[in-house]
Each structure stands twice: as structure tokens, then as C-alpha cells.
Length: 377
View (cartoon, rainbow, N blue to C red):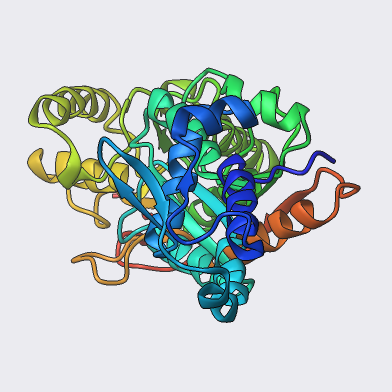
């Protein structure tokens, strides 16, 4: 496996050794950013970062227009060199995710950071906000900063992140969470979305519902949603109940929490939901692919005089404990997903022989206030 040591640390360590050995003495001028870039065949951004780190540690002084000069002798820095070297050599782990809210993601971030700290790593965090361009830029930025491994919660969409594909092909340590990406043979840790949807749909069947709708964002290229749609189909088949494909709506284009959506987007989605629910009033229960979608469905039903759960039951994935209404939902084990992902990444960093692993974390059904048994009126 290729060792991915940050380039700026290589430059930094050479200069540090020269200062410690006395080759560069107090008052000596240090090579410039350009000279270092040429010498080590790196970018000036990289050489600047190495000089900035030496400056932050009070080993050199950078004077604009004149250059950088050694301000400590080898004797003065010898006592603290081991501590500083240990800090500089702590692993940097990059974590990229679309964002988080109370329903899902907050515990994930906390657990990833906690486990990284326990293993002696520093965490770099970046939100992609569902943008593939931001995600790709974050990957490049983290590599430039010297990240030795990446944990990525991929954005929705029918595309392959070419940078991730390139890194995986080079055996760079990457672990995906929540979903996998078709075409990228990377390890992943997530809920078994198909199994979870089979179980939550079966739960509605057991309550007596047979006219069940399914609402999600478009699922092309997003394996988590594809698996949930597949689970919805399989549940009908297993229970011998005919699936009405007209009851499936996959046009909620943005799965951000309701409070983060623009008025224009909310209005567009309200029109789509209103039309769907008005057309299919025979539906008595709905599987919402995400908590935010469940909230929108409830609001749309209420506007048209239909109550939850008396008229329509709703289940979803994830539901914050502090929300006004607790949905009956699939509860994902965010903490265990995070722990497994960080452990797996550290294993891949340490062991080049580690194979691609697919780890599914168990889930549970949490009963809330949005479901009840169906009875013919």
C-alpha cells in the first residue's frame, strides 16, 4: 500500500531536523517558499504550509519582504521536539457528509469524533449540503491538508465521484457510510435499508393496512433509497398483497429538513404532495423514506382535513426524540455505525492487506404516535 504522508510534513521534518542538528543556526535564513517548492517538487501552497507550521511553533520568524529566519537554537527546541513531533504525526481523518439534524446525523458526528480522539486522530469535518461539487472539493481539500483516510456519507444522485474512484483504485483508505456507491469498490457501513423497509412495511400490514403509499426523493444512483424502494416491493410480495405502483411517489427532490428548505422548494413539493394525496385518497398508510418527508406528508394531510393517525398512518426512517410528534420509525444505530466506520478506516490505514468489507448495522422499530390499527369505516 502506498504511504500517504502529507507532503507539507515531509518539508517540515527536513527543516526541523536541520534546525535541531545545528545545520540551520539561530539567525540563519531559511529557504523561501519557491526554493522549497523547487527542491521538493511540491506546490508553493505545500511549502508555505510547512513554513507556517514552523512559524506557529516559534522556530522561525517570517518577515514580509525579507524571508524566514531561525529564531531558536537546537538546544532550545530539543526538550519540546518529541511532544511537537507527536502532535504533528497525529493522523488526520476527513469526514464528509451532506449535513445533519436532530432526526439523523448528530449522534453520528459526535460518535465519529469521539472514536477518532480515542484512537489518537484529529478529525476534519465538511458538509457537502447535498452538492456533488462541494463533496469533490472537500475530498481534494482534505488530501491537501494531509488526511490519511476519509469517511464519506455520499450525496444523493446518479453520478460517480471520480476523485473517490481514483483514490479507491490507489488503495487509499476510504470508508463509506449510510450507503454504497455503484462502481466504487469501497468498504461501507450502513443500516440494511432493504431489510428495514420490509420490516416497517410489514408492521403496517400487521396493523391491517393494505393500501400503503411510499414517498421518497428520486432514487436513481442512490443505493439507500433504491434499497428502501426494493424493500417496499418485497414486503408486498412476502405478504401476498398486490402492489399498486401508483402509490409510489419519488419526486421529493430535496431531503433537507423542512426548516432548511427554501419557500420556492417547499411550495413545489407541497403541490406535488397535495396532488398525490388528493388523487389517492384510498391510501390508509404511508412509508416516508425520511423524517422530513414524513413531516411534509402530515402537513399536507392536515391541510385537507385528514388526521394522523386516525385517517392515515405514517412511518418513516428516524425521528428526533424532542419533536412535537414522535413518528413510528426505523431507528438507526448511529453510534455503532460511526464506531465501526472509524475502526474499519484505522484498520485500512494500518493494514494494506485489509479487504473490502460490507457491514450492516442492526436497527429497530420504535413505535410512536403516527400509527394505529386500520378498521373499515
